[in-house]
Image (cartoon, helix red, strand yellow):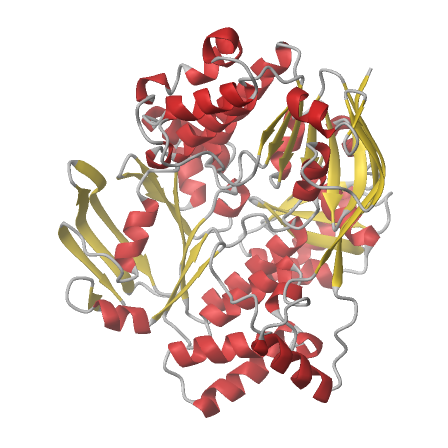
Length: 248
Length: 331
């Protein structure tokens, strides 16, 4: 955690779909440069909340702001200052490495010159010089994930949302990926991420665990383990989520 | 008794985009030629000389990341894909010649949800039962434990089910024809830790009923729940054995280290001449020394020089340590 300045502020956020309450009075802050793990069982309401924070969906009630912008009134401003990456959708497979960087740079409103400089930096940094003109489809999965993360950061966003970024990735690449995350966080970029790997929960600065639309716990991994008298985050998760499972 | 026998199976695919003849592909190829980039080697080897056996009644796991070849292998074993080279048989039937028999005795749950989204839960199950010439009633006892958990929703469309319910319906449909062997391709991918635990409890129940189960997963921690596992990566099997055999085969000591400043600790340890490798492992770092006889006191003294508060102790290697080590050896 670099500062005490909240970059995401959420107060009593509620999102209902008909009679179903997907997010039930969520309140939390995320601070600048923090790696914030947003955990929960499938169907607990993580995606709903993430969509709201990315400016893609409006809450039913409550307050939320991201990088100082209100989620009701200024969703497009939010979209300009965030990056997003998920396991499912990250890069266009039938474009080359360079073309993908150019495409996403353009989408994020960067000018040609900037894109050119940034592309070169990125390619050098990831050691992709020989692969710059290769199709994404021909790259090993691990490289794709690392590139996808860098592309999500191409416009120097304040916050980056990572939705299960390491799902299905081999153990070595998974760790290299985390090195990139730490590096981004140390530069002051806030990381908001979901994962099903509980060892990765240990790498976060703070973690929230959602159960049935509510935040059931929020603290550092160390304090959560103390609070639940557990050895690992896996135990904490199972203890919390088990009580809340109403999904068959 | 061997239930599955696989000898030297290989399978290659054309790379995506390489066979394309659309105008864009042509421009791309012309451009690439101009730049002097070779587009040869347009094939990817999905499986490279894979051999193994699975015994009757075993719960056998393929553990490996995306792109390891798990799905290609499963599709070959359930007769949906023909290998380029090698031989494979399931319950004594050849996967190419006897494909019709194979389909009757195997249950297959693909990684991607493949049931009919606009049929109801019950309609899906009836459909699969009918295809195999049976009825839900006839084999209800086999799926009772699992299906009873979603039976209350039997009139709901499959597309409207939650992830956990879809998984249970897919497993019921894969079992309704009383298969001798089940192939479950990544049934727990993207599933939270609690639901994963429950799914494995279900598999252990099925195993006690005598069904052979072959399952694949990218989660290393699920290896310990299998009788035997094959660690698979890049189309080849890195190692086969019981989880404890694989761990016993890891001959280097593993030290768990924790300090207040993880990043500094990693870079300090990387510079340490005794360091073979160091990587984060949950709340600790795992440190593998070059010298297998290194004394823990020597190591902890060195670490305490710059990290006086650090905790250092020796741990049993984990399957994930073995996987990382095998991947490095392969490179």
